[in-house]
Image 1 (cartoon, rainbow, N blue to C red):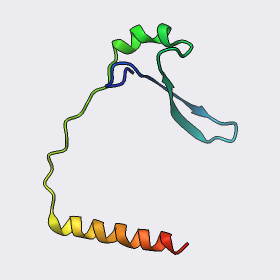
Image 2 (cartoon, helix red, strand yellow):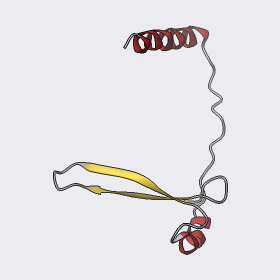
Image 3 (cartoon, rainbow, N blue to C red):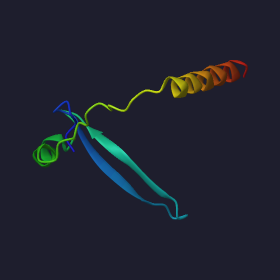
Amino acid sequence: MLDANGVTIWLKYGGRTVEGHFYDGWYKFEPGDPRYDELLPQAQQNPQVVEEENKAPIYPETLAILQEMRRKTRERNAGQ
């Protein structure tokens, strides 16, 4: 997948370990990296879809709750 910047290529990988755990991640290719030139044509056919900004309303009560939670988390982490 070609990043929205038009340069970086992201290639998804994944699998299963011998123990049965699933894993996944992304390889990041930039100009000059091995295989970049090989992957570029295919990545250009599969560009990243840039989603529009969320237009959901912001509720003051919910925002206040989230800010309070963040404050308590910071206080708790500062004490460690």
